[in-house]
Image (cartoon, rainbow over all chains, first blue to last red; front, top):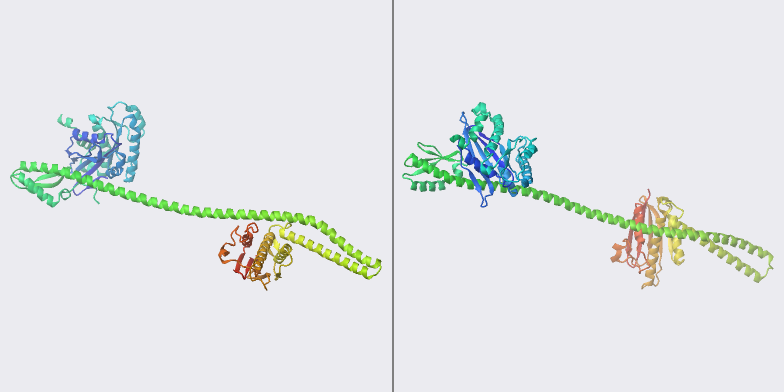
Amino acid sequence: MADHSPEDNKLALKVVFYGPALSGKTTNLMQLHSLLNPQRKGELMVLETRDDRTLFFDMLPIGLKGESGLDLRLKLYTVPGQVQHDSTRKAVLSRADAVVFVADSQTGQQDNNATAFGNLEENLEKVGLDIDTLPMAVQFNKRDLPGVVGDTELQQRWADTPWAPLQMASALHGKGVLETFRVLLGRLYTEVDREFALATGHGIDRDTFIRQLSAASEENRA
Amino acid sequence: MRNFEDDPTLEDLLTSDQRQRLNQMLSALCRKPVSIGKDRSNGSVALEFNLETVGWLSGGSCEQERLAVADLVSFLMMFIAKYRLAANLHHDTTEASYAELQKQNAALKASEARYRALSDQLQEKVDEQVAVIKQAQMDLYESARLRSVGQLAAGVAHEINNPIGFMSSNLKVAGDYVNDLRERVPDSELNRDLLDDFADLIAESSDGARRIASIVSDLKTFSSIDQADHTLCDVNDLLSSAVHLLQTEYGHGVDILEKPGELPKISGHPSRLSQTFYNLLDNAVQALKCRQQGAGAEGWSGRILAKTSVDDGGIRVVIQDNGCGIAEDIREQVFDAFFTSRPVGSGTGLGLTVARDTARAHQGTIQIDSREDMGCRVTLFLPIR
């Protein structure tokens, strides 16, 4: 849950990148680190193992200051996707404010996607969160690879869920990463504004929230 | 409780010892000493970690020097924090996994206990069923035996009743004829002796025929061919026919003293009661025989007492003998089915088993008091319902 301390005028939000093993969660975060140029950006913390698989998590803090002096932080986390790290996934997922589900587009990986999504649902329930009300964006990654499930088929399959439309990405090439993040920020804003009156109390409207937190480096330079 | 992801404070990242050493090392690099502290002072530079100001750096020769040192410190803190975060997360997940394991362990233990209880019950249930089957088998055996005895007895009784009937009747007429002859033959010593002897012969034959008729009647009672399963029965009658039957079988040399008391009729299975009395009496006869064949039988005479009385709301049947008694070491087994102390082929090992089952079927009890080489007393108690 959002960590709000009124005395410091600080609001910390937690976004978790979830998904099956090797679907590109860490790649998403690394791309965000290099593509993003938000008001404030911390160091990307990667707790990598020898074979480059995530063991604990990766974390990227970004932030912005509101007109009221509100210090708003967004901590972006990834979880380890491998099945055996379930208790780590649960620990990282606890108190999350939003989730980006990174799925693998390859035809052979659809079962793993389903398993990981089921695991997300189960773990959210265990940490006291509800998948139906939690702000979430679903990204299908690796669109650049051959043998992926078609766009229309995927969009159709997810059309009746609260997470449509899906975001298509090729994180390795930096495509679709910012777009996914912006969709998530939009959904997150709705929830956070309702609870903390960002627009009326702190002068942060939806547009500012999304633009400031997801400003791209190129755009800023331009 | 703090979460692994809570922003670390300066104390979390560096102990005061480490902070001092770091101050010394950094100061050695700078033109003027620098120091890391928690509070902001004039000209100090913020030390940032994760967008969070964790401390302030003061001292140094100029702003540029302070900024350079602050960068270095932030860089160092990044690695310290990485380790901390990983360690805390590892600790959290290990504890969670352990708690989960313990929960599973407890659940497993509970389920194991449940299955153990179930398996114990299963053994009990199997034992129960085995006992029921054993009992049913024995009942079947006994009832088949009773049925065949009954059929045999019925056949014999039917076949004997007719000839015995006309024999008795003819002998009676023959006796009258002898009396008629007395008037018709010349009165002489020889004739008188002959006729007297003739009359005696007929009288003895008549008596024999009467006894045969009585045996047939006892056989009928014993096999209960004309009785339903549950009827009112007179225990004295049943006991008496068993005694007669036994005397017929062993000859009248067996000394059986009957002491029937005044008894009400009770509801029961006459055939099973007869069989029981017969079995008990037969055991007594066997015990007498056994003692007679043993040493020190001179001056001893075997006796059997068959006594009935009303007592404690029930009928007490006592069958007592002064035979060889029951040896101590087999006393526990005498009621066991197919247990017998007699030579192979002469005992079925069911006598007392049937007696006990009959007592139970009448909600009664059976008790044996015995001393080896002194005798044995069997007390059958049948409640009046």
